[in-house]
Image (cartoon, rainbow, N blue to C red; front, side, top):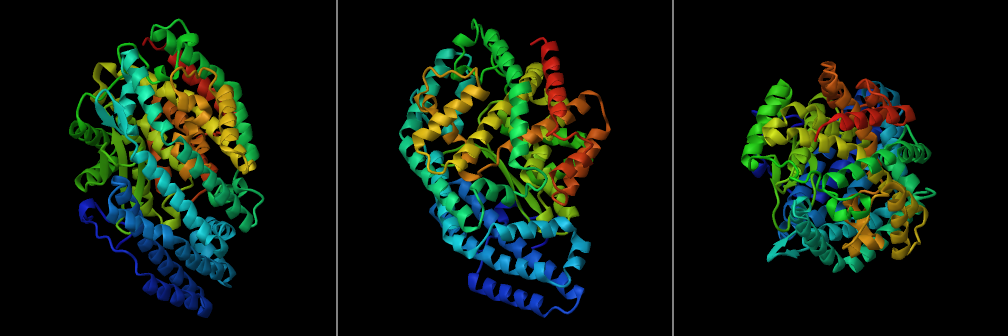
Length: 575
C-alpha cells in the first residue's frame, strides 16, 4: 500500500484488497521495532524507525477502516460483523504495542531530532495518547466498543411502520418535511412508537457506557471522564471552562435569534405563533414545501461533478476520483447504519463518503459537508509526512465540512432551481439555530460525566432542563419518547463519540465567517480554505483558524458579530 495514490493509480472501492491482520506476525514486527528504538545510536536510526512505525500503523488502520465501513453498509452481514468484531477485540492490544513505541520515542536521546523533523505537535499527541492508555483498560475499551456496536445495530435495524410501508430512521425523516401537517404528525407518531419499543434497551446500554467510561478515567488517573476525553481529543488550546463561556455566549446572543426565527417559521406555516408550533413542524420551512433536489442520485452526482470542476481544478480532480472509484455510498437501504460520515483508507490514499439520501435538501447538504471532509484528507494525505497529520482535531475537521457547504452556494441552482433562494435561506437559518442545540448536547454531556451514578430518569430530567434553556420554542404534542427527555438518545455522538459535538458549533462560527467572505466576494476565501485542507492536522485548532484568516470562535465579539450579520441577512430576504 502507498500513502498517496493519484486518481490514475487508485483501485476502485469494490476492488480494494482487504486482509485481516495477522496478530502474531504483527507482534513480531512490533517487537523488532521496539528493539530498533532501544538499539538506536543515531538520529537517523530513530527517524527511520518512526517512518516504519508510521507505515505499520497506516496499514493496520486502513484495514480497520475498511472493516468499519463494510459493517456500516450492512449491519446484518455476519461476515463483516465478524471482521468488525476482530478489531473491537484486538485493537486495544495493538494500541498497547503502539504505546510501547511511544514510550521509547519519548525517552529517546534523539527526541529533539524527531521534533525538529516533525514538529512539537507530533510529540505532544504521543504524550497525551500515553496519558489516556494503560493496559488495565484494554477490556474496558473492548466493552465500550461492543456497547457502541450494539447501539448502532439496534437503531439501524429499527423498523418503523407507516401507512403500509416499513422505513428505517433515515427513511422516515423525509415525511417530517411533508406539507400535509397530518402526514408530519402521523410520521412522527410512528417514529416515536418505534423508539419506545427500544427505550429500555437504550437506557441499559447508556448506563453501561457511562460506567465503563468513568472506570476508564479512574484507571488512567484522571479526575473525571470529561478531563480524560479532552486530553484524548487533543483539546490543548482550551478547557472545559472556555467551552462553558462559549455556551454562555450562545445563550446570550444566539438563543434569542433562534427563538425569533422559529416564530417567523411558525407564521410562515400559517400558525398563529409558537403556541401552535410543535416539534413535528420544525423540519418544514415553507408552506409550499422545502426545496428538494430536482434530479435523482445519478443526476445529483453529475451536477456535483460540474460544480467541483468549476469551483477549482483540485476539487474537480478530487470528485472525479471519488465518483470513478465508487468511493461513495449514498443510497438509503435496510440494515444500513444511520447518518453520514467520511473516513479514509490511508494505505491507498483515498477517502470514502457514506450517506443516506432521502430526497430532501439534506442530500445536498450532507454530500457537500462530507465532501469537505474528504477533500481535506485527500489534500493533507498528499502533503503531510505522518498519519498523525492527515486529520486535524474534530473541531478543525468540521471547519472544512461546514465551510464547503457555503463555498458551493453559487451552484445550488443546479440542484434546487427556482427554489434556490429558499434553500439558501433555510441553510443559513439552520446554521444559526443549530448552535443552541449543539450547546445543549455539550452541556448535557458535561453533566452526565460529572454525575456518573445518575439514573436514566435523572438524565432525562436533565435533558428536559437543557431543552428549556437552549430550545425554548420546543413543544411536544405527540412525541412520548422525546417528551420524556429521551431525544438525545437518537444523537449517536452521545453514545459513540462522547464530547464530539461542541466541535460543530465552534466550526460553524468559522464556517459563517467563510459565508461572510463569500458574500463579500472575497476571492482569497477559497485559497485560504484549500490552504488549511493541506495543513491537515499539522497544527492545532486555533492555529488553523488563524491560518485561514478567521477570528477565534471563543471570542464573544466574534459570535455576536457573525450571528447578528446572519440574522440581518435573513431579515432582508423575501421568502
